[in-house]
Each structure stands twice: as structure tokens, then as C-alpha cells.
Length: 341
Ligand code: KG4
Ligand code: ZN
Image (cartoon, rainbow, N blue to C red; front, side):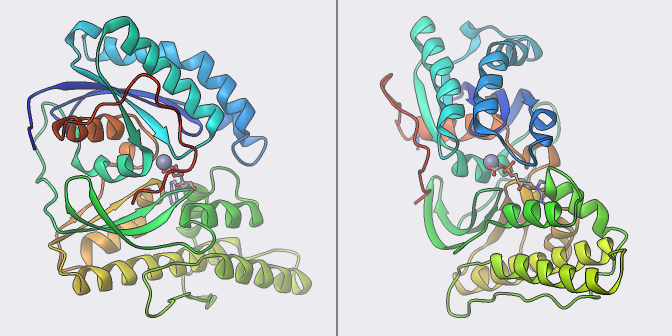
């Protein structure tokens, strides 16, 4: 791998965040701007795709300008552009993609299309420029990716080399948080709302099922979600007020148990040196705590600001892809579905 020093500007618009970031040498974050559409979508209880793409159109230019301004740079100081190609919402991806192509065409800079899931994993490589440099994740690495759309265990044997061991058969972990949040009327986005409510609750009051799916590295969360629904319906028959924090905490505990134990078992079985946890759900405090305190492995979890969608992670992948000699032509298209491996 030819790791030449370079600065990458990346754009990410796969879902409901319009983001731009500049990263040096794959790891040092010079600037990161994320324009969240959370409030716009809250009234719908989830992301409304048409609303998301229209908002990206409005936000993308100012977000790129802000990222350059924050880093005190101009496009002349940038060596290459990276953009999220997929997976994600087609109408959202296309806005970032067209912006990136326009910048590439106007500036002559090379462009690299990046897989969003790969981006989430690389968020664990990033640190703020000027701060102390955290240890770099070491291969072979057992990588748990837990986002709103995906839950996967990948063995990384080298940079950009993934062996997908398992994934969810139904709901992603983040999706389960969002659905249970709606069920318990805790609001949107669901993950942080469930976590907040769970802080007041007893995680062992309700014995919700854990889908171990023995003999596989796959996950399943829809049975758990249904169990919360049935328990809630039963409780409603008996009392007007629901023990919401206990339900939230017991649900959260069930998700964490499965994610943690399956990752640990996979890390041991495949001889991983270290563990990486990334994606929106890796912002969950008790999940971070258990991974930081109850393993014999060094564990890498991105800082909170890089757990959910951002462009820094896309810039990081762009750097390592360029080091392998990858560039994309200007006629690349978005890939709304694009598995990691
Ligand atoms: O990675 P991400 O920002 O977007 C996707 O690529 O999907 O992940 C968003 C997901 C949402 O489902 C959200 O509820 C969940 O991450 N999430 C959390 C927390 N913060 C965000 N889940 C549990 N606890 C949290 N603190
Ligand atoms: Zn994401």
C-alpha cells in the first residue's frame, strides 16, 4: 500500500445528514460539518426520503464551504475527493454524488466512490488533528457494525479486506431501537431516546428473548421487538401506566447481550487481535461500557461525534482506497444497495 501524505475532502449524503469533512493521511481530522435533518423528520417518526433529498440540495453547498472554511483551506489544498456511493437512499445519495462530481470536474481533482458501511468501520481510525494520536487498529480485527440499516460481523484481515461472517436476518439493531422507541412513545431518533429512558429502568425486570442463532454469526432482532410489543399489550390490559423505563432497559439489555457475546465469541474463534465497534448504535453508552470493560481484547470505538453519519469516515476510506490505486471515473453512479463484501 502506497501511503503518500494527502488531504481528502469527502461528502456524505446517504440518509438524513448532509456532511462534509477534510481528513489528512486517512486519520487526522481537520474539519467536519454535519447538517442534521433530525427535526425535519421527527414529525414523521422516521426519515421521509423525498424531504431528505430536497434538504440535501439546500445544504450541500454551504456544508462543503463550511468544511473548507473550518480547516482554513481552499480546494487548491486538497489532493482528492471522496463521496458516499452507497448503500443508502437513492435520492439522497445522488445529491452528494453530483456535488462531488461537479467539484471534481471543476477542480480536476480525482474522485473516489466509497461504501458507507466501510466508512463506519474507518471512523475508528480517526482522531482530531493536533490531539494525541490513538493507537491504530491492528489486524486481524473483529469488526461489529451496528447502524440503523445494518448489523454485521466482519473479520478484517487487512485494510479494506473484509470477510462477512454474519448479518441480521431481519431488523438491524438500530432499527430495533427506533421501532421500540416508537412503540414506547419515546420519540425519534429512537436509540438515544431508549437509552435515556433505560437509565431510569431495571434491565432485568423483563426477560426478553435473545436470538443466539447458535452455529451462525447472524443476528435477529424482530422477535425481541415483538416480545416488547406483546409485553406492552399485556401490561396495558392490567394498568393504565406502563413501566416504560423498565421496558426500555430490558430491551436494551437484550440487544447488548447478543451483540457483545457474539462479537466476543467470534473474536476468539477467528483469532482476532483486536475488536472494533462502529455505526450509530456504537454511540450507546452501556454498549460502549461493556465493550470497554469486559473484554481481554483492545477495543476501538469511535468518539460519539463519529458514531453516527459523518463525512470524515468517508474521507478516511478514500485515503486508503487511493493508496491502493483506486479512483472512480466521473460516470460512477450511486449504489443504493451495496454490501460490504
Ligand atoms: O449509523 P447511523 O447514523 O445511520 C445508518 O447508517 O443507519 O445509525 C443510526 C442508528 C439509528 O437507528 C439510531 O437510533 C441508532 O443508530 N442510535 C443509537 C444511539 N444513537 C444512535 N442506538 C442506541 N443507542 C444510542 N445512543
Ligand atoms: Zn450510517
